[in-house]
Length: 196
Image 1: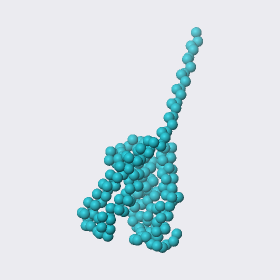
Image 2: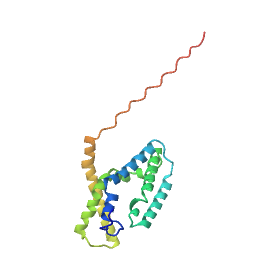
Image 3: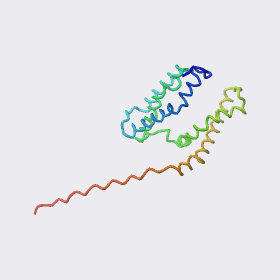
Image 4: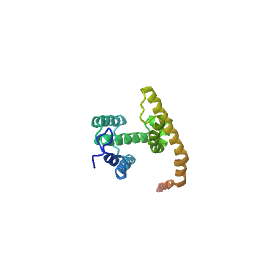
């Protein structure tokens, strides 16, 4: 990939960043990894890595990411496998019925609106700075309030998009899974005839 023009603050070009972050065939690998993880859990072939161990691997991946930043490899290469392991370990724990904060009401709500949040968060971040001052900076307390307000705006817009577009679209165009026929009852044991 061409090494210029450089992306500000990173050792990668705009083209390299586009290829890693936006190029559909590359992003499809995320979906394939998710599909494989789901199949592993559903087929009962999970390796049994506990959630804390998976989180430890993720922490190590983040440490490697920080050490490699701002190189191309520091963007995602060090955390892809650990993120997949964390998600799979949590899914396996959910199937076992293990206690989890991720099933709490607020986190379930954020999970439900996560796709809509993915769609709107960058727009909120990109356009909110214009009325606030594109080149302006703030001290830590003011920046914290602004970040919280932007998170709130993103959450509110995501909830609206989810309720007014995503849910009605799923009702209209999704198809429920075909009902699985109930298994046939086991045949009754043959009567035992006693000799007379």
